[in-house]
Image (cartoon, rainbow, N blue to C red; front, side, top):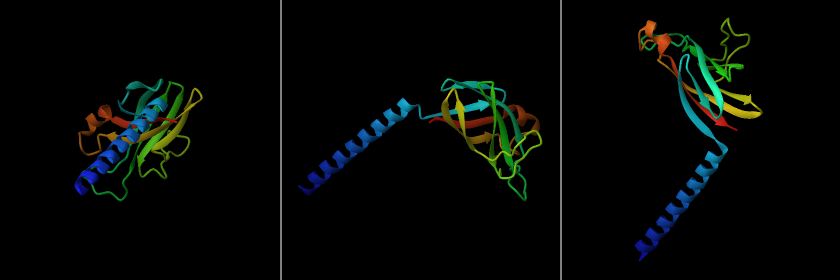
Length: 151
């Protein structure tokens, strides 16, 4: 008898959990919460009605086959709707100020306003990692993985 009651209780809890998860997922979809994208260099895509382009990369990360004093960083240039230029960084980004940028770049996530809507861009990965492919191939094979979250 105790086993039957325990089984019924656990089954009821499992159903409740699924119901909450389904409701939360429906609310997230309605708000357009998150979209994950991959972009190759010089490629563009549409995300939540925004044209997003991956324009350039400056990669000074320590190569996979080297021993370095600091980890380095990778800075990517993105265009939003061809009118807004943004830079995002992964790695040791606290003091990054490449010569072509007017201000330091220190973020792997950035809030951007487009047409009075706020979005959070989160840079997750930049590949290939230095030292894993031939240098001549790396520049044309760069790819970013990121999330775009409508706020």
